Length: 99
Image (cartoon, rainbow, N blue to C red; front, top):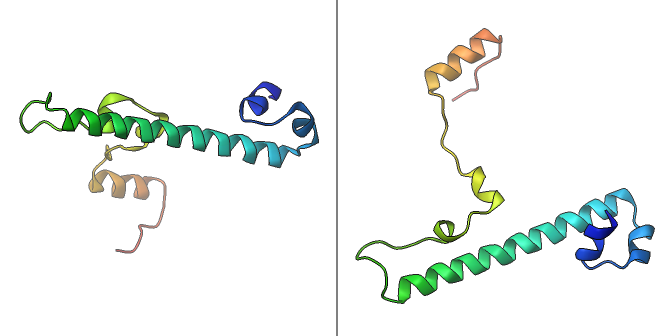
């Protein structure tokens, strides 16, 4: 834990004075900043590639094509249909949401 806090920029003295909540917020903020840096770099890579003239006609690259990040896994398509959803709601005695 101390190593991660120091990596994020805290001194050991600051680390030992932090509450659990402060530590958690501090580390999450550091992770978000690092993720934003990677997002920026991969979009820059895609922009450079797309303007270099090396790409095939009509094939533009996106940042996701260069570097996969943990947040990319959030992009998903639903695997169940509405009928399956209704059947699951009935099976578990759940009220269907109003449309």
